[in-house]
Length: 319
Image (tube, rainbow, N blue to C red):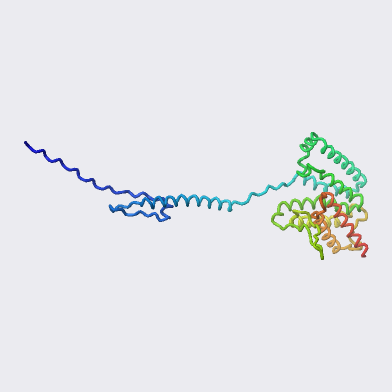
């Protein structure tokens, strides 16, 4: 018998080279380096890899929070939308362009007063009905609500105070002074509001009160939220109104305006410059002054007109 031939023994397989797997960038940055194993090939330590992966995840969450916070810090704060009140300001300032032609054309003042008085009665009755008839109130606001501020929808219309202020100066002050006061109401108030909304947040607020000497009391001064930007705009506009009107417009109206070039007192360019500066300060103060809860459409023409009248009376008395 022949013995079976020995079967060839399988040769051990050659060890295959272990391919390196690229590490994520975050693990590489945390020091997860491949370690040599006993076969001489490179491999990553399991515990180190898991630990680095955990740190990587923690780091990723932390970085996301930091990115969100940095984005919030970098993003500018939401800008409050400015309500320019364009229809309201257009109507407000157009009164000045109506007053000047009436003045230089010598239109009878009593007819103007009568027309304004009738308009005041009509607007007042409309407001009375609006407050007591909800259906009419809805119709009224849908028709002319674009000319009203939101606060005016729940109180007396600003047009009422506007008419009362204009009637006051027309009835009680010399005509040239009344015209200047109405122009300040029409134009200085508008520019103060416009520039206050544009640049008021970038300038200081006017003081709302001042301390009384030798007491612990404080005297109310300017209304809240009045800014240096709005005050400056009112001063410049009031100066231009006063100077240009008395240099050009006043002689075209009444025969004897309060200031005339060549007539004493202050009937020279220095006197006009003084009057111009005074008119600007009066406009700025009258627009920003705190007079309780009274509407500035009422207080501005009365204060500015009365201050101009007092100036001319003081100059007349001192001369």
